[in-house]
Structures are given as C-alpha cells and as structure tokens.
Picture (cartoon, rainbow, N blue to C red):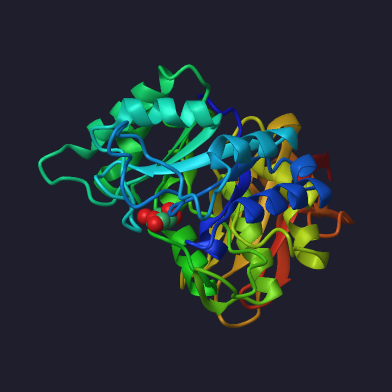
Length: 376
Ligand code: GAL
C-alpha cells in the first residue's frame, strides 16, 4: 500500500503493553470517534505485540488470538473497529518470535498475511526480534511485503527494524509504507528529544509512499503505562507533538485515548499542526538556524500553496531567544519581502517580520508558525 500522507492512528504498545483485550480495543475505537480523533485524521487502530497465544495452532500452523484477551476472535474486533469507520492494524515480527516472545512470522509470511487478510487488517506493524543470524534482514521485509501485496487486501506495511542496516537506503524498495528509524521511545523529554535529533539528517528519507517513523507518540501519557519513565510536562508534550508534525512523521498516539481530554486532546487535534504534518508535498524540514551548542534550532518546512512552517525549538534547560535570518529561507534583504505569521498553537495573527525573526522560547519549548511571504 502506498500512503500519500503520514499515516495517523493509535497503537496499544506505549500504554497497554501486554494488557490488551477485546473490551479495551472496542472502548478505544468508541473514544477515537467520540473525541473527534477520527475526524482529525487518526484512522488506524493498531494492536501491537502480545495479542496471540504463545504457540501456533498445531494443526493449521496459524497464529491464533489469545482467547482470554480476545474471546470473540480477531475478526469480531476488526468488524467492530471498521463499523466505527476506523481502519484495523495488527502486529507481527520478521523473526521466529516477537519481541515479547509470541510466535513471529519467519518462514510463515504468506500464511500469516492470509490470516491478517482474513481478520480484515488494513495495517501490519512488522518487528525485528529473534531474526535467525543466517538470514538477510532486508529479504525478510521483501518477503512480508510480497506476501501482503498478494493476500487479497490492501494492507499498509509498517516496518520496525529500529533503523538497523541503514534501513532508509532500501526500505522504500521493499514496498513498506513507513519504517521505524530509531529504538523505542519512552515517556520522557530526553527520549523524544534524542529520537528527534537522531533523525534530522534523515528527514530527506521520507515522503509519499514510505515515511520515516520516529515512533509512537507519548503525548498525553502522563507517565502511565508500559513505557512510563520520568513523564513529560505539558510544555514538553507540546514540543514533542510539534516536532513530530514538523518532521512529517506518522502520528500514532500512544496514550490511553479513552482518557485524553482538555489541553492534550486540543493539542493532538490542533488543525494548524496537523496541516503541517499532513501537507501533501511532504517536503523534508531543514535547519534555518542552529545555536552553537546544537540544542536550539529553527526548523523550516516549505508547504504547498506558498506556505512555510517555522518551529523555534529550544531543547536546552534555559529559556532563550531564538532567531533566524529570512535569507535562510531564500528571502534576501534585496527582495524587500517579509513574512506574515500565524501562531500555530493559538491560531492568532502574529504580524509581519522582515530581515530576521526572533522569538523567546521557554526551556524545552517550541514555538510554531505558519508563514506567507508578503511585500514589506
Ligand atoms: C519493539 C518495538 C516496539 C514494540 C515492541 C513490542 O521492538 O520497537 O514499538 O512493538 O517491540 O514487543
């Protein structure tokens, strides 16, 4: 499947880990609709690891759902999810076991792709644990992609090899629709900061058809659940979400969406930030200015219709003024042009600047603007 824009949805792993169930998935599907998440674009509901029995069925060799967690089987869950207007995602692994030690799809790729098609899956996250040493990892993503392309259903392949083997060089050629480029996120500022910083150079390896996936969001987790760590402040969650949007990353929510409300719900449905993320040109961001210590950045991104997104990102522990010269965008002083800006967090007109732009940004904060070129 060839996604034209960064896929958006929810994944069970960050909050629920192995504590997944039929009821929890149905409640999540309800919440995604009732809270306006589906309407905002979050369409995939993905069940991550730990959904199956520990062993394949001895007769059919198929992976079988754990009947304690999913007593009505997976098709019933998928039907419910589809009935809500959402798309349904499943999880497996290129190795012999999944990362949490359930059956993997190694040498069962075509059988498992058929099983996922029977469930009505629209998305498959495909992990990389327990890969036999003698097997070439690239080939395993080719196999599952081939199996999915020929299973009779349109299923988006979400590769997850954590950035190993220079994945960005070859993953698009396999047919995958997105690919994880980093290790696992946890609910902390340091975790999302380092993941993001590690991929700035690789923003160019992302675009329609195959998106660089910098992992599921921890926004709104409030340090509860499977990947809890130090937790984040609301300001830090705003920075995380803004950066994922600026990057054009897939937006997979990892918090308990049954409980998301108020500021966090507003944040993840912010129409300006989502417009940046979902811009159809999917151009990479670039650095318009960078501080000497490398942790203060102004990122820019050229959007369609002459719009420019700007993110003043202060990843240091001190408040600071960040700036860049408009020339860095291709607006030299001689052009006599300025930028009219809209604050992406408030939707307010932030006026016109020329020559350079300066913004005070709190420690760990991020200010985001949508800008248009005007005569000045
Ligand atoms: C990891 C993967 C996580 C999650 C986990 C499940 O390899 O990066 O996102 O899927 O496995 O065990």
